[in-house]
Image (cartoon, rainbow, N blue to C red; front, top):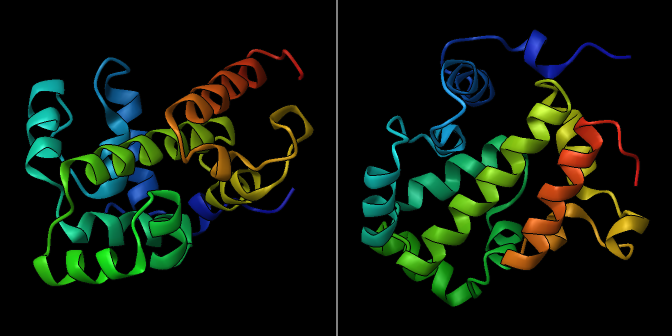
Length: 164
């Protein structure tokens, strides 16, 4: 197996390393927020931040971590191209968009854990069409809450050796 990206790019500022460190510290919090560049991950603070609308920079952070374009992320988050431009100018996402962005970071965080910190493997898996998901990719399924829940259940089964 190839050396993981984590091993090649280990640095305190690396979002994947920050995520893995947050996971090691406490499973009970919301460590996936670190993938967006959010340091505090308590439920009350995170909920307030989402309600206020996450900064556009948080979207940019996650697209960099996931190796995807802003346009691809916007499609997954149901943000039209015109709205994406407006959010960029305004510097802030709407609450519903922020909630979907946070959900995407949660799913990607679980994929990172599944692949033991290997960002490239997690990205590859998120983009792979899987028969168990009706030949959709985990990324495509992450567009909706029911799809996201199914991806997260699949990750749980894979982590426990229940092959689907």
